[in-house]
Amino acid sequence: MRESSQARCGFVALIGAPNAGKSTLLNAVVDAKISIVSRKVQTTRSLVRGIAAEGDAQIVLVDTPGIFAPRRRLDRAMVSSAWGGAADADAVALLVDSRKGIDAEVEAVLAGLASRQAAPILVLNKIDLVARPKLLELAAALNAKLAFAETFMISALSGDGIADLKKRLAALMPPGPWLYPEDQISDAPLRTLATEITREKLFDRLHDELPYQTTVETQTWTDRKDGSARLEQTIYVTREAHKKIIIGEKGRTIKAIGMAARRDIEAAAEQRIHLFLFVKVRENWQDDPERYRAMGIDFPND
Image (cartoon, rainbow, N blue to C red; front, top):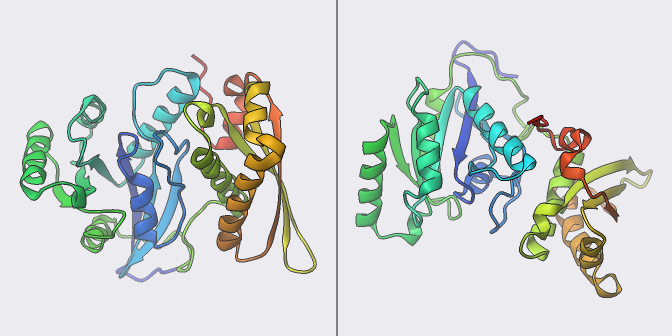
């Protein structure tokens, strides 16, 4: 734990519309897979914290759920969690997908940021997919709508521009001792990361709305004498028909999900994993406060 007179430490909230690249950016800055990534929108459900060091500064990056117009109770909880993460942070970075530009979702986030006293940082992502004149035009249009402290152009996927952004975030951190050991890259327990990894594989393998009707909970993590661990997880779905789809013909789908999840969990845990997946129907899990507590987000009563 660094406690020198020059030590700095603080929180940076990464906010934006769904699929802006917040999770990819978090993983790139930390240089490890901390937050799950999917081509589908609204994958992140709770606040995910990644920890990065830059010189004398420790940066705690908070990956928030994408901000969108909520339709369901779970949606409302995710959006509330995102704005809560922004309110508590020392700095806020708004990520915008350069290909999409300013759409209704970005407009909504800009409106929400307008009342914040400290000016946020604008981060245009996916710049490798957009011509430079259009990037400059987009940056000017966004700065005309809201006075950003600075504008950065990056590709979270390729790493272009990440080093400069990281240095600037480090400079914004307030003086103070580091909150975490130097070698720690996340505050999430391994079992929480394992849960998220399996949920990521569900998003990869399943189509349409089905992944949004599922949640995963790690029930047991038992370390064994040979250095491996036995991990049991439950996938909750809302309908019997969903259970059949996840299991697949002769169990092929659930087997593929389990194999993919096990590989990533082993990499994160640095030990051999024996993963056992169970699928259970819980029709109203999205209205169950206990499921929200398991996800690490507040249950909205309205």
